[in-house]
Image (cartoon, rainbow, N blue to C red):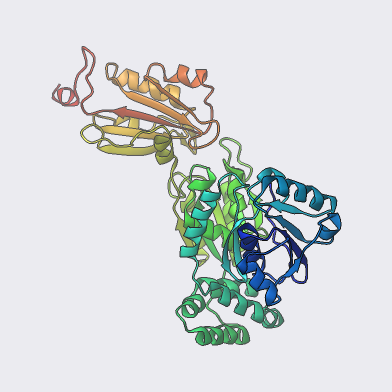
Length: 466
């Protein structure tokens, strides 16, 4: 980031606006939403600013302008509409030690005005560091449509009740309370117009320490997708933001953890191929133990938890311990890899069967049964199979020496450093060596239904007759 987003305390502080016409009026409208004292430096004012001055909302000063006019100000806007005048006033303001925003001149700005979604006291600021104001306004429009008009009033009510909640509830229960308020019936009730009913609901919950069974721990097995931060699901992001503790694998994009609540405990459990920092049994026991302590646990897995993610072992342990859990699906590596190179996993008339399998089992690398059973119309997507690739290639060459299999390898799909290669069965091993593909990769082997076999080949039907 070239700029750092921050909300400034404005109550009782001084904001200076240099300029008296429309640009200055725009800034005045913005700052007057705060509790700042607004001073306008200009020889004359347009009608809007003159009206604000007449009713005491702003203070108008005329006469020569010098550095002293900008001293002790929280912020200065230079908005005359004249580039030469703006530059001169910028220099004077800087001489007075001010933080300056010059309208429409990013190079002269210490601070950039964001697009704002105002649900006071809930305020969302959107900035593009001055590069794309139109985009910022588009994002603002979408957020305006998403956030309920009365959401700020609900937040203000929560603010008024925070002291009562702090006096009666432990820290963990307070987090659960506000999660319930903003995710559940109080929010729905409030935004529907029944503010009094919602307020009574929240006050009763605080007094009785009763707002649903949220003291019990729970576990979410969340698929992080192929690793890219923007390919985790919205539900996955929500669970990260609600989690007390996160057990995570060797994430391919550590920025995914930036989506979690800041004070959530993060526990790295490794799970790198062939180099597990934690054995699976220890991971499972730790997840269960955290949930038994009443924590909301996220077990964050690469890809999809249900596809070679060993989630069955964890789910069985959770069920045995009577701990509620859910599975939040993620984009599995086969889908991510195919999409990354513009391919489809199936194709009408050519590939009508997709098999997901692995070349790495608990006892080491293997040639999976799906390879032995491959026939026209089948595509096999192989997970964790780079180490088994030479054996797989030999098995296919021995069994089907004349079949022109379509072979594709995609490593680090959807991430920086992505590598893809198309080859034949006979060149698969050499291709992996040439492209230095040794770890996280998908290998796709397809036998298109209408592929033309080389001379001497025998069809599946012919072999069955023979």
